[in-house]
Each structure stands twice: as C-alpha cells, then as structure tokens.
Length: 256
Image (cartoon, rainbow, N blue to C red; front, top):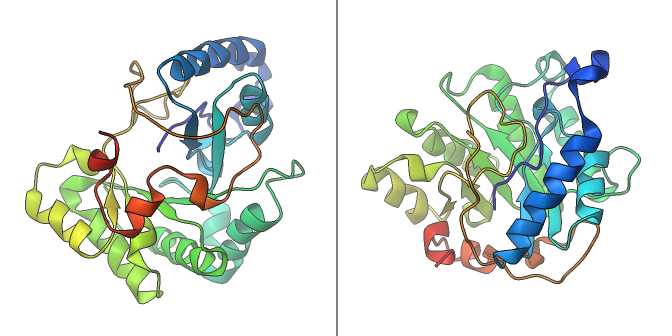
C-alpha cells in the first residue's frame, strides 16, 4: 500500500545523467517485481511524488515488464519545491486533479491516490497548503489520501484536523507510518476518527530517499488484482483494503 519503485533527487539526474543508470535500474526493478509476484502480490501502490523525483515514464516501463499492477500517486512529500510556496491552495489542488483526471505529463497514466506529508518540522505554511490542496483534490475526485507522518510529533492528528476542516471524509484517509508508534491512545484516536492506519512500508525503492525508507527485503503481503502488464491507473475500488478503509480499520488487520 506504500511503495516506491524508484526515487530520485529532482534536477540532479537531469543535469548529471551519468549518475542515473536507467537500464540497470530497469533490470533490477524487473527482478524485484518478479519476486513480489512470486510472493503473491498482484498490485502495489507507488506513492512517489514530484519532490521525490517521480519519473512516470520509468514507472510505466517497469510496469510493462512486470505482471504486478502498479497504481500511481499525485501529491507532494515533505520537501516541496519552491513552486509550492509561491502558489495558492487551489492552484496546487488543480495540479493534483489534473494528474487524476487527465493523466501525468503526456503519458495518459492517471493517478488514483493522493500523497501528502508532515515530518519533524510539523505543519509549516507550505505543508499546510499542500495538505489543504490534497483535501480539495480528494473532494473533487473521490480518490483516497495516503499520508507520511512523524509519529513522535503525533502529526497524524494535525493532518486529520486539516482534512476535517476541509470537509474530507476521514474514512478516505490512510495515515502512514503509524507502525512507528506504540502509543495506543494516539493510534486508536486516528482510527476512531475514521482513518485507516498503515505501518512503515516494506521498501521496494531502488534508491531510498534521504534514508527515510531504508531498503529491506519485501515482506509477504496478500493483494488481489488482475495480472496486468501496464501502469494504467485503476479506480480506487480496485485497491485491496479500501472497503475496509471505509470502515476505518487498521491496515495491520487487512494484511493478515
């Protein structure tokens, strides 16, 4: 429910292409996706955003080489580029809606989930704008939101508060990295308000971003989905667990 096929530092590989071994990454990704398929996984949700160097054409190439279906995301992680400080909430929301309804770039691949984040700095002005933009895009499109949090700061609560202010149904929200906390009061509160909680993900990333998601062998999880060889986004109803999300269950329960 929270994977990254590959993450990059935006602008670095475009300016120093010798740092990016695209053929080698495709070979490695093909091998890892085959391993996931052998473990029974049929669908992954790639939550790589623009500030994580989302390369939709690379994701498409990986998906076409794999029997695992890939669902892609729009949104922004917790290191937004300068652009997002200089544009308003509705302008940013329009970008997310465009990715969902028209497709990403010129590929026609449509995002089916929105990613947003808070981390150690908490809800800064730019992060608040992105959270609100995510909420407004969710209300327009109906796709779910999946977040990154810093549990030591209980930032999932701040996320829920902003989403609720914007009128989002919290049953359509997955609060990520909740598995980093053993504070049952905090975790129960997130679920009682309706959201699904999700643990720290098994990293599929070939280039883990800034050490926040260290690479590790994928854990076995059961997903349903058709055997497809392209990255065309599916409707949110195709995501295993979203029915339970609507009931506010924990992802840990869904993965059993």
